[in-house]
Image 1 (tube, rainbow, N blue to C red):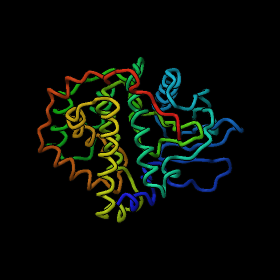
Image 2: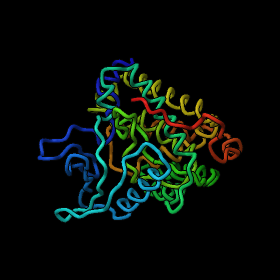
Image 3: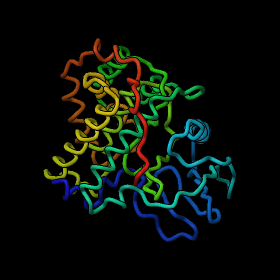
Image 4: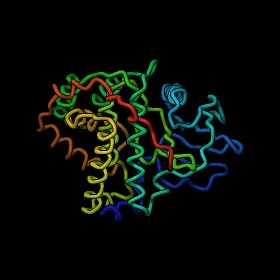
Length: 308
């Protein structure tokens, strides 16, 4: 089952092969990446774009790099052909979705390293970044869901801690570059100050319901089963690194899932909506979830591995 999924190795949003454009080395829903010399790239946002997203990626990338996290260095904000972008140090490598496309064991080991990187991120404060809680609320209020599900998600959100930890907001294999120096995490435009459990719940969601090829492929039973197993593996790897209680992640699943239906429609939306309906019938342990104030720190825990 895992081998079936690895055909495109979790080709999540923004990972479609870029068309042949001079100097373009990557393309996603909101931006394109172009070579800018031998050691730099420029990430240009598509128009129309939200200036707040550019400013947030700039601030979050600089903050994360300053903490010594495995991220490319942000060098400046630039304008090119009426578009705004960020100049980054170039990473010599390929996305995990490419590196492990036909290597399911390598993918699983890589995901374990990503989980440890995510835990290291959560050990850092996030001064000046927007509130994860407020962002989720705005997305839930605009999500494409029936009103009872929206109100259930908002009620759950109100019972969850706000948090003040650095959260990437979109950790998944498509946003991880495998280099000779180790794994590097890109695309910080959704970074926020918040609860680590919510950030992990978002990663779990993307692993299970992020865009994966054509609609018919995502609906294949072996693919669904493989994605569920991979998501569970990832959550287990994060919990092993952090000590995060299972209940903390479970409590965030409903609001995080509903917030996902705020963005552009995807061919997995129907499956996600069905999952949301199931989540709305459950009763998470909010008391246990709220007891977790941040990542448990102990010697040797929370440090990202450097091997690719």
